[in-house]
Length: 155
Image 1 (tube, one colour):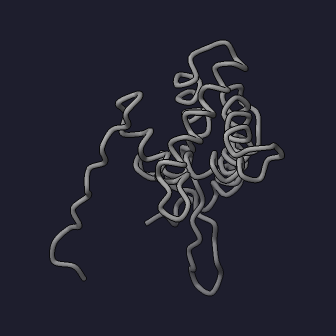
Image 2 (cartoon, rainbow, N blue to C red):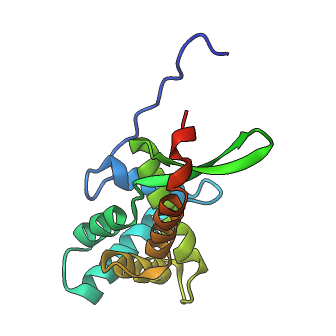
């Protein structure tokens, strides 16, 4: 076991919105270390969101993230030869991480010409409470609700 806790390296805020969360999102979006390309995709998608909704793209993105953020999840735990799905609260750091990863994952699976287009459509859908990323959150909550009977096994 480690003797000291790992120090988290603070992220630099992005250039346009001066927000660390944007940098974190772009880091999740990035492939093969191409951060500049990832930033271009992100900013382009926010411009498209603004064009589609007529609102501030950054605010719509924030709303989409909060709509996709899960509160509870199920974790597998082996007890007496049987594996139970035990509902548990999600840590604040993990909440943000899951919501970002779901938004990116389901935008990649969407149909569209460019990644910016797909991401923009997923952000708009998530801000309205629709789309695959929002459905993933609902399914996660539903599964936790269904397995509420095993909550007493929580560690």
